[in-house]
Amino acid sequence: MILFLAAFILLLCISAPITVALGGCSLVYALFGGAAPITTLIQTTFGGLTSFPLLAIPLFMLAGNLMNEGGLTPDLVNFARNILGHIRGGLGHATILACALFAAISGAAVATAVAIGVVMLPAMKKAGYDEGTAAALTCTAACLGPIIPPSIPFIIYGVASNVSIAGLFVGGVLPGLVLAAALMGYMHLVATRHDYPRDPKKSGKEIFLTAAKALPALFMPVLIMGGILSGMFTPTEAAGVTVVYSAAMGAFYYRQLNLKNLPRVFLKSGLESGMVMLLIAMSEPFAWFIAADQIPQLIIDWISQVTTSPYAILFLINIFLLLLGIPLETAPALVIVTPILVPIGAAVGIDPIHLGIVVCLNLVLGLITPPVGAVLFAVCGVTGMTLDRLSRAIWPPFFVSLAVLGIVTYLPWLSTFLPRLVLGR
Image (tube, rainbow, N blue to C red; front, side, top):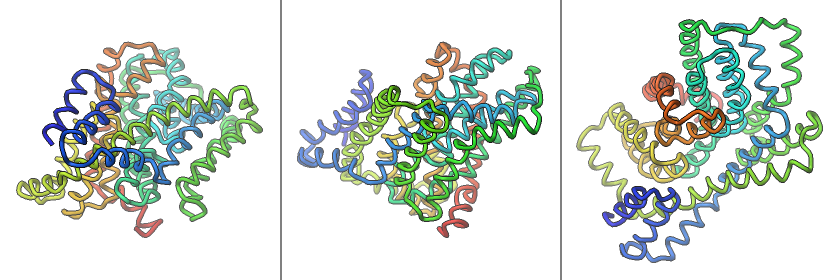
């Protein structure tokens, strides 16, 4: 195991891509560690991608890109702006609402940040918002993407832990709404302090017309969750239905999706989902070798000697995951830590759905933690802002999100109430 970890750390230190680091250390351990034959490495790498629920990942990514190309996203943004634009800091509030609405379709933080940021960041800058504050708010609001269902991290966690993905989807609703409300409270304080402008209040007729135009996009979350909860289709089938619905609306209702831009959509979706699936594939042998060396049991034994309090263990898990989320992407981190953390949680009576939401929220915050957060890089690409400036601006909304993490961690009913009510879990 020392050889295994040494190879992993060495590859990270020489700035090797995370896929190379994960696969490289597994290869070194298979060749020289004597833990398993090289065929085990091959089998676990490919075997990790054969789970049917993982098919939902590329499908939800494709649905998000079809939304952007088909013209659904701008209508979501306009709807959010018309509802909230008239209050103090309305553009900031509209950004949060737009991220929440887009999150209910895409399930990914980076996609949410780019899709909403392209529209809202120039508008906030033009209205006189501080560019750093606007960009930091967009980054943090994009974290709603993996928390409000459907969620790609929830799918990965569900596959790795054998926990109901539908239960995780339903369990993420209240934590996502709490995070959105907390960010709106933060935005209200900032807007009041800096006297940010507000849009003219829209009439009821204007709001109705905007809502009517955005109705196909607004109906999509209802289609996804309604179909899953009613038993009409599984989360994976829901992803397929979402793709067909997005394509149909973009082609026939908005008339912006055609045969010319479809290849671009497929190429972008293929590259994005390919990166995620490669990370998962390289993480599988890494997680297998950790389990083969009984690392989870060793950790459980060590923790049981220190404390048996679920509250203390959740605190230790939060600290561990916040640190782990800085260098590691969400997907490989979930594949690696889930087999370790689920037995620990089960040993002290932590609900697996509650644990999954806490784990995913922790790792999602890693996406906005300087200096290597993926969402930070995405928003820098949209705005042209330097990473150094955005890294300084991100801390206030980051700490707001950290406070929400504490609330979700120690109020487990936020994660378990709806699954028990709706699914009886």
